[in-house]
Image (tube, rainbow, N blue to C red):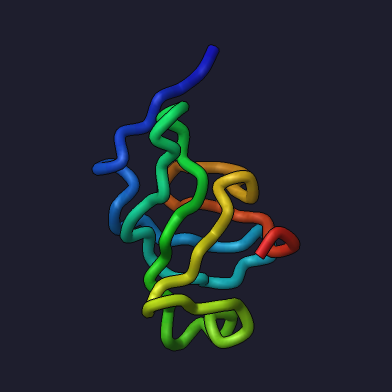
Length: 83
């Protein structure tokens, strides 16, 4: 069974890595026009997290491949290896 998530529900959620680093807040998504699936998340980096300095920041946001998402609940949990 596939769960559908409305993008409005994701906006503002904290994005953290599986090893506990705070990456920032979800601000937008790149969506495939053909399939309608999320290809990547755009995250506003956390200035005090430190991890944002180590990953590529493009136009003020960090692009996180959606394939790295492990869980979505109160937080969006991503695998740091895939960044």
